[in-house]
Length: 78
Image (cartoon, rainbow, N blue to C red):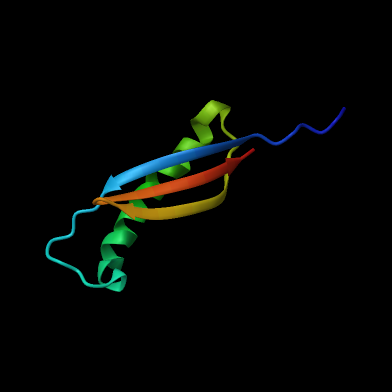
């Protein structure tokens, strides 16, 4: 039986990034970013088991900040 070809998906998640006050550096924002990433992971982990029958793993990811949003892009493979 030939080996099955891997399948790939891209999953994008967003969160509103609201931090009171003006922050000058990304390091000032680190606690809020860490909290947002924790919320991404809390939703991402169970969804990997249910997305199109499950069996997905995160191969790569990217985090972008745009207009008050944190955009997490996850490259998946199974």
